[in-house]
Length: 352
Image 1 (cartoon, rainbow, N blue to C red):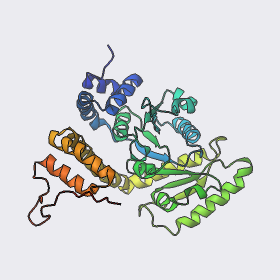
Image 2 (cartoon, rainbow, N blue to C red; image 1 turned 120 degrees about the vertical axis):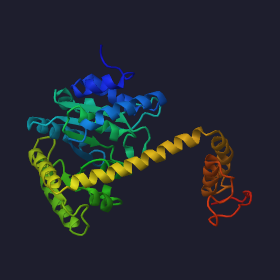
Image 3 (cartoon, rainbow, N blue to C red; image 1 turned 30 degrees about the vertical axis):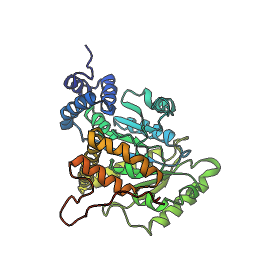
């Protein structure tokens, strides 16, 4: 009988045994927001945790149209040819109607999805910050426990997605367009500071020379930025995912990063920092869920939200009152002696 989400221990054993359906069910379970599913997901993750962590986690981002899916497919197929087992977690925009993925990455990576040693999983972003699914970190652990030693996380490439994916992977790879610096102008510095490898894609045909020039310009720009890690200097190269040119070299760059950063203990340090950040993110999420379910705090939220929306009450004042109600402290009094005196009732003056 196949393992079901209702039996997390049996599901964990099936995942470790290489059952692809079990792997898909496990990720569905960890992505669920139902309270009973979250309890089972915690049991599943506890059973899988000792077998996770043995992979290289690669985050890939870039603006829409840069060719992320084409690159990931070519890169993943080459990695499989080199003996790796590849898992791809692609974070799609969410449908406003169903909440499901819009882009359907399995249809955009047909060759990779058909590979026996590959696993491709599109996940709806669910409106989470940066286009990264809320449970992507947990999905990474599940894929690792299933034996995938190269886990790729692709983002939708908007807003804070680059920061989010860099905070949960070992290597951050940024794809760029030939001569396409304009679309990154506003956030280029921050993105470049995060990137470990920058690849100018579509370096073929008439764009090959432009791509070479663009790569040289980015190399020059990197010289003015502080490296993300003292143990690694960001590398810029060109490739063409459509023709396959430069894909092997890109894989070799990733392998060199893995070898050097592992030997220097840098990956271990990155993961330790990420684990701490993950814990505090989960603490914040759990507190928010409990606060919204708290009768007194929820009632006060219902009362104060319209006033904040109208501009009659500053959001910071409302937030403190809600937190005081959640903690059982008298609203409007200081949480510690001398930190904040009693507050007068909100006025009707608008705050702009």
